[in-house]
Image (cartoon, rainbow, N blue to C red; front, side):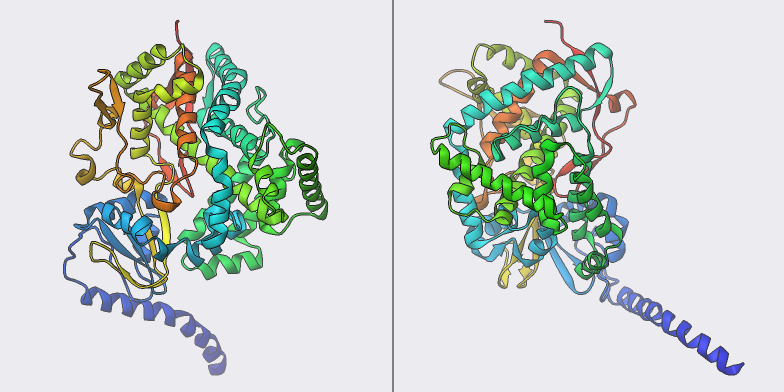
Amino acid sequence: MMMLNLEVSTPLVLCFLPALFLFVLVKFNALLFSSSSKNPKLPRSYPFIGSIFAIYANRERGIQWTSELALASPSKTVVIHRPVFRQIVVTANPANVRHILITHFHNYEKGDFFNVVMRDLLGDGIFNTDGEKWKFQRQVASHEFNTKSLRKFIEQVVDSELSDRLIPILSVAANNNTVIDFQDILQRFTFDNVCKIAFGSDPAYLSPSLPSEKFAQAFEDAVRISGQRFQSFHPLVWKIKRYLNVGSEKDLRIAVNQVGICLHYMIIIIIIINSFMNVARPQIRDFAKNVMKEKKKELEENASLNSVDLLSRFLSSGHSEENFVTDIVISFILAGRDTTSAALVWFFWLVSRHERVETQILSEITDKSESKMYDQAKEMVYTHAAISESMRLYPPVPVDGKQAVDDDILPDGTVVKRGTQVNYHPFAMGRSEEIWGKDWPEFRPERWLKEDRVTGGRQFVAKDAYEYPVFQAGPRICLGKEMAVLQMKSIASGVLRRFKVVPVLMENNKDPVFISYLTSKMKGGFPVRIEERKI
């Protein structure tokens, strides 16, 4: 009996030893660091586990929490200690942002950490690479964003999607007084747009019947789970889960499989996502090869195609390896679909709450109504200001990160060790009193405008890119910045000219919840009622 008790108690003791060790460490650290910090909001850090308790407690509001930490710091920079001796530098200091994005650009790359976390989703796409691979993709893609291409995109792609799909859907919703998820609608709109640019094909995802959402949900799940990897206790956790095919990593594979039952016009997206996850069925890979062959054949037979998409450009560049090209295209789909729709969701929300702003936008739309859509969008300075102001408060990419190649010291004195993650925080910077003044909480497009002494009208004045890094800055500044702004102005004009967007949340006196994985979202969607304007 004594032996039996010993056998039972030994594993029990072994189980409790880690907990006992942790308890001692916590108590020791509490005594060691009991003095007040210069930043009272800075979470307490414990040996080995870092600030895991604070991180866990704020897991549902990580963007807001890190924003509060950075803004409460005199230098607008904090160092957060993650478990297992990992540190992350979070900064909302414009001098630091300039240092990271241009002055010492060579020392701050996407790096191994980001690349490994996002590789299943983004592969070797432009947002997940450094060096020559990044330079090549940027050089080839840059040809897609010239003035001629921009005009064609606005006057053909965006205009047709507006008049043939979005406006009719909103008209039906207005006539039937139905509630629609405007976040979903805008994601469908931008998805159709970016597919026309990327593939030269139209998935018609925003057709009146609103086709099956299984692809959208699978894509959302893939982005969400990939983003959650950054919040893992340690990268080894999700890697083990992926190897064992359990938990969220199993969900990621399931999401990819769900894509396979979408309609035929989504098959090329299935190819891309499945190729990232290395779980594509042989017939899917065969189809992928056939798509590439057909596109190559099309290019060979007609070298002077009027419609040149990104896929064609990369195939024509001599880099036709299947996985590499699909990596490139999925990155542009992610950027073109998620960031633009995210910006528009918060724009329409803010405009709906500020009648004065909506009135001025409508006045501008009326004044420019005789111009072609591209020229009209270029001339809409107040709408541009309103969109910029909404992105200040709700940036599509609220936090972006780099990894230090070598040891460095930031302008504010923060020491950065080699391999450290350094995140700059556009969400926090948009709320900085030092940058925007005491009225920063106000939605005030006028802060982006000044009087044009020659014409007597108003002129849009862009802010310093390192104080407003919504589109990044320096060598990696967003290639599609102008295209995105023109697209958003065109959509704003097309919708607000005909309709008033009334959020259902306002009827219930509730504010939407800002969440983010890779890009920002409105938690639970953006339910609205559409009211037709009396013209």
